[in-house]
Length: 138
Image 1 (cartoon, rainbow, N blue to C red):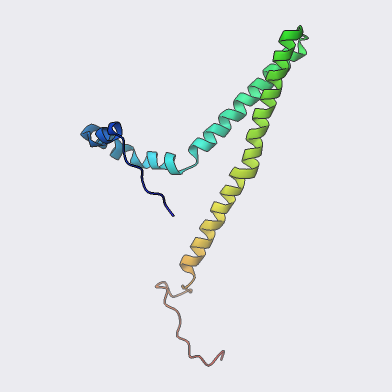
Image 2: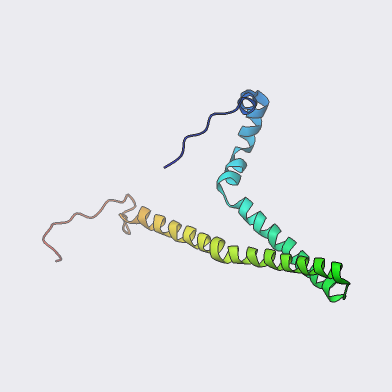
């Protein structure tokens, strides 16, 4: 069930009526659809989270292992813990969300391909089923 499109505000309506903006939209429409309906933002966010978390984790470890005084040691420990939480969270999301979603998509494609060829048999590219007599097997 799709939800109705909300009404446009004045700025968006004016932009969409501009011929230059309409031309730009037509040129970039496939890429915008891929961004809107695809997983690109999720993948970029996960990759960025992983890299930033790993950098914070290593930086916190290096500062912490230098034996700093108390206020700096607390900040180093917080940076170390924050980095650990970020990169491990990114790994967990990949393992629990992204990989199963990719597998579901592969299975869905295989099922759809099978269903598309279900009525077809070798030598019958038109999908026509062989005639049956109703008597049972010969």
